[in-house]
Each structure stands twice: as structure tokens, then as C-alpha cells.
Length: 626
Image 1: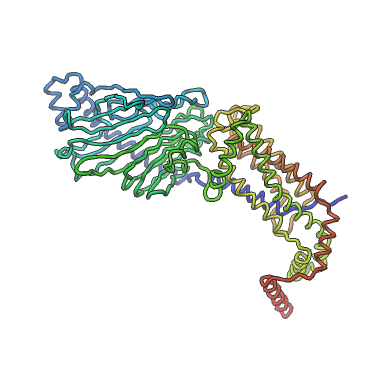
Image 2: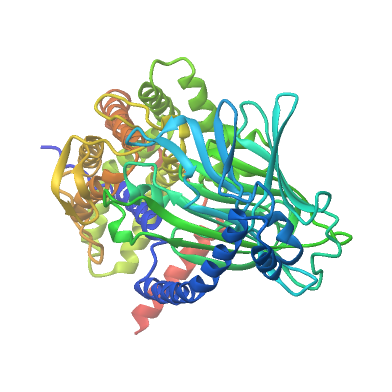
């Protein structure tokens, strides 16, 4: 009966892949100390908000008194006391709770008179996991924009409390909305929105006219933007994993706050800020970079509760940016983007916005940008479904990598042929580890074999593995695309709901991860064998062989089914390739004959090998002297 071989090199490759998976899943999980610190901080903020509410309520009450009766002299005086020169805006007909709607084919925006900011941002062509329209801002409750500034008569005002006057016009096919907070008919602070046809990008500007003597140039002017990410996906925890704050600074550098709860103090020269919610994003861009900006990201729901069906929002983002006056006036040309986190759409703007799509760093991102994204787009353009496109791409990737698989298996075959001689050396020098190692290395050198030659091909596949690990969860094209029993390739597939929740696994059973785990187990059985022996000082390899499929089963149960489909098909193809190589291509007798020929040829050692040999001989001599 043929002895089955223990392939330690393949195990190393799988262990490395497993380590990468664990690192990817848990690197940014907040510690208990961070959670407690954030909770204490939030309690302090809530306490402060409670203290501020009476004053805010009094201001609103006085302002509404003027709205109800603009001729009331008492109300006018109260407004002047509160607003100074901006009391003029409170006496206009527009000083009431009202919204103005502008829209195009893909986007509908509602802008509130109070604050002049967007109270609703609806993406017309998309639905959530439960068939509800996708709102990035809804009812003005999850987002705010406030300009805080001082006046020359020593008042501190917030635009979120004040009423703007709306005016809608057309510039060709572009809808233009101006929101003006007036001091007089010709003096005002203006927010200007320009919405073009079929565009998610909105031209936006903040400017003032005639306010040199009204805005206090000695007081800081800050723009505060806040947003709570509305849940759109079936798994709140999975969506939260890809929900994060990104920004660009100092020209072309970009960074993000990560998956946990963070505050980034005062980045310089910030040119855009993105609140990314996995597949949808809200982005503020400016042509005049903010000199400094402060960012905060925190989890609204407890992480342990993120799979709760009642979770409605995931993270809360906030940014504070100082604005600067130019000749006593404000003049900032900006843009808003409310739309899908689609690599192609974002990259077409040529503003580095595609960096918010998590394609991986370094070579991994390069592989996705220039290889997998265009290749997958090509395949999906003519194949009948995205699931078929994943399968075809997987087949092609595995065929391209088959030479690497072949090289790995040839290395295994060489080691298998040399095994009797290695056993003989081990038995001959069982009491002398140094001599045993010397003769083993000499045998490898003469035969032209190396134990590392099987490991290196496995390591070469890691960039492809990691690139695809990032590609599938970020591929917007897969969102709500069905295949076989999976109704959404961007989320997990479900074949059974569990009446309880299993830690790290979830409250459902996904079939694609099960199939992928079985395929990995079969592959490892083929390459490692059932009768593997554990070397002294090494971990139990049989345990690791069972651990890898188990890790796949647990960790991928909540991941995108498109990713699990890829790994299932990939391992099936790898098993097929291995069977062909083993039974058709590889001939153990020919390999043995070739090794014997190599052993007869004089082998010139490199300087490094000579040095290592000398060092080992010196160590052996010192040992004998002792």
C-alpha cells in the first residue's frame, strides 16, 4: 500500500491564509476599554445636550412667535435680540417649516428652509434588502449641516436654527436652487445647489454677499457636518464592517478611521470627506481645501446587537472644518455626492474618490483595479448572470495559476521520491542533529530538490487570494443579484434560519460556505494524507487540517455569497487540476530517474552554501571537542 505523504508546505500555505483571514476579520474590533471610554464620553455629551435644550427651546419659541405674527413688535424685538442683523430673515414669508424638492432621473433631494440643508436624499434606482427605497438622508433626522459664526455685534449664530429663502431656476437642463439667509434683500449668506441630469454629483457652494460688516472676522467660522448611516443591508454587522469615514488630504493622500470608534484630530488641507456605508456613500468635496478638519466615527448600535432586526442605523459620523474669509466674505465652491459606492462611477470623476472602495493596499489593490475589475466587467457584459460570471472568472484564474500548482506538486513528488533516503539519513544520524541536517541538505542539493520549493508557489497565490477577498465584498454589481438559491450575491445565502444565535456563526445556515469548506477539506486530504505524522516540536498538523475548513465554515457564514461561491468553485477546480497532474502528467519513476541523474552531476555550491557548510562543520567540531 502506497504511503501517503505529509505535505508540510501546503499546510504552511493554508495556515498563512487562515491567519490572514483572522487578521482581516478582527484587526479593527474595538477593545472593551475603548467601548467603555466611548460610552462615558457619550453620557457626558448627552448630559450637555440636556443642559442646552432649554435655551434652544426658548430660541425656537421666540422665532416661531415672529413667524406666526411678523407684524408683532414684541416678536420683532425678540428676534433682533436673538439674531441681530439676521432678524430680517426671520420676518420673511420663507421663515417657516417647508421644503423645496429638486430631482433628476437618479436622485431626489429635499432641502429644508430651516438650515438650508438637505432633509431627504433618495436614490431612485435602488432598494434596500427589504424592498424599501434607499435613503441616505430621511426626514432630516439622520443628517445635519451647520455653519457656526460670530457677528460684529457679539452674537454666535448657527445656520441650522435659521430660515433660508429658497429660489428655484433652470440653467439649461440643470436645476438650480439658491437658499439665502438674508440680512437685507441684497446682503445674504447663500447655499447654492446645482443638479444636472442623471448625476449623483451636485454642485454646491457657500458664499456671502455684503456681509463684511456683519460676520466677525476675529471669531472662528466652522462648518459641522453630521450623518448617521441608515441600514440598507440584510446583515447589519456585515454592513457595519464596511461602513467607515474616508478623507483626502494634502493633495492626493487618503486615509480612513477604521471599523471601530475613532477621532482623528485636525488633518490638514482636506479636499474631500466621505461617509461610506458599504454600497452607498455621502461625500463632501471642496475646491478650496479645508485648512484643518476633525473627524469622528462611532457605532450607534452596540456591536453585539448589530444583527438585531430592529437596528436602523449603524455608524454616526461627524466632521468639523474651519472656513476662512476672503476680503471679509465666504466663497467656497464644493460638491455633494449622494450615490452608490461603485468603483466605476467614482473613478470616472477623476477626484481620487475610488479610493473609498476597499480593494486592498499595494499590489492587492493594483491587481483588483487593473485586472479583476475590468475582467469581471467584461465577463458580466455578455454572460447570462453574475453567478456564471464568477464561475467563469474562477475557472480562468485557476487555469492561469495552474503552472504554480504544477510546480508545487512536482516539488511534492520529488520530496516523496527522496523520502526513503531521508528516512535512512534520519535513522543513521538519529543522535546527531547537526550531521543529520548536513547530509539532508547535501541530498537536496544533489537531487535538485528543496522543501521550500513547494511552499513558495503557495505563497505566490496569496496576492490573488487577498485581492479577491477584497474584490467580491466591494463589487457593487453583485448587490441584489441572485444565483441558484442565493438571492443576493453581495450578502450571505440562507438555506435555514436558526431559532438561536451561535457566536461567530450567526442565526442562519449558509450553503456556499459549507460547500467551500467541504472542498477545502477534500483538497487537504489529497495533499496531506490521512496518515500524516507530526514532527517533534511542530503543531499537530492533523488538527490544522481540520481547522482550516472549520474556519471557512464559521467566518464565511456571514460573508458575501459571491465570495464563498468563488472559493467553492476554485477548490473544486484545484482538486481537478491536482488529479490530472497526479494521474496523467506526473510520472514518479521519471522523477526518480531524473533525481538520480542530478545526483551524479557535480553540483557547484554557491558562496552562501559554502559558508553555511563551513559554519555547520565548525559547530560539529566544537561539539566533538566538548
